[in-house]
Image 1 (cartoon, helix red, strand yellow):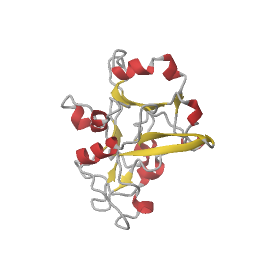
Image 2 (image 1 turned 60 degrees about the vertical axis):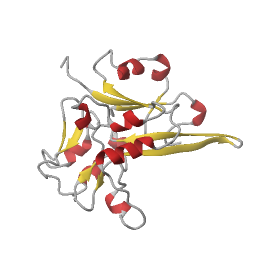
Image 3 (image 1 turned 90 degrees about the horizontal axis):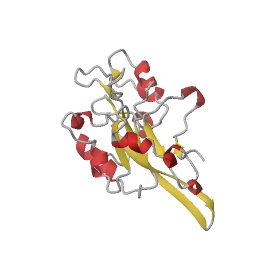
Length: 214
């Protein structure tokens, strides 16, 4: 419907320097405590990050090598398979596009079906202490106070732009309309049978750096 919000994230990979400020800000905002060594079985529970700074490459032939960093988070898909994998009401998609979990009513039992259904490995994980699924929420609690998501607020290179993609005047909409952005969009590859429509958009203009999955 006209007038409805549709939140999304724009990630400019040309600006990212791999500082991990987004990871740190997210951990502090949501009180995600570090887990090291054998304290957590990563294969069983997943990685304890709501946003994770990864890197791709190297690409090219020595000595002309290149790589790039990218922040990976829940894509808040238009057609989220995690929602269908959960019991009704546990994970849900709001009218503004955010995909969230109902932790208030403690409906999640930590079965992990949502994580298995997600085409992006690692963006949903099961906390072994609470036995609840965890994932990026686009910091909806901050939006209610008129603030940006923590990762956006603390990115020193301004790689991340968050906003309403249905508002043609929003910063994210303005960036998505730029011709060199439209010609250089890339996406994290997923298995063909798990194709989704994400609302996190990545752009990389330095084509010599290759692309996801190379």
